[in-house]
Amino acid sequence: MTRDEAQKLVQAYLLALKQPSEGLNPQGFGGAVIGEAQLYFEYHGKTQQLEASALVYKFRDRPKPGVIEGFSAEEKAGTDTGGGVVDYEPENKSLFLSRSYAAVPPVETFQQHMDQLMKASLHWSTEVIERVASRVFKN
Image (cartoon, rainbow, N blue to C red; front, side, top):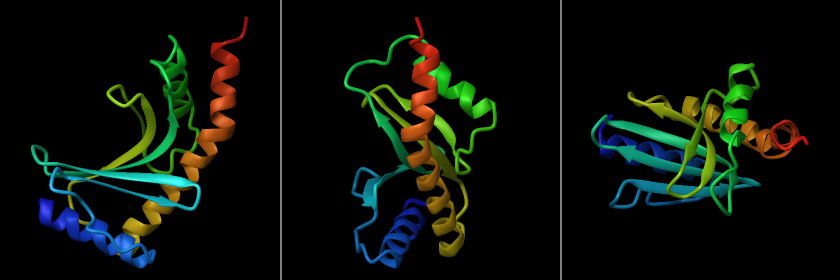
C-alpha cells in the first residue's frame, strides 16, 4: 500500500462517517474520535502498511509488571480483539488493539474492520481491564 493509497482510504472512511479529514498528516499519522472510541492511523513507509489502532487505555505512568502480559494472555485466551492484536506503545504509554493493512481493502470492508476494532476496544477498556487488574493486583 502506498502512502497515497493509505491517505485516500482513511479519508474515504472518515468521510463515510461524516467526519471529513485530511486522513493522514505529512508525518503519516491521523485519528478520530468516533462515539466513545478513539481510532489512530499510522502509515509505515518502510513496510508500506497502514496501521489502524483503537485505544484501550492510556497509562499515566509505565504499567506495573505483569499488566501488559495480562492483556497478552487475554488475547491468547481468545478474548475478542476485533481482528486486531494487543499493541502496547511505550512512547505514549498507551494500550491499543491494532491491525495492519499491506493491501488496500474496499472502504466497506475497512469500515467493518474499524467497527469491530472499536467495539472490541470499548469492551477491553471496561471488562477486560477489570479482569486483568484483578489478576495482576490480587494480594
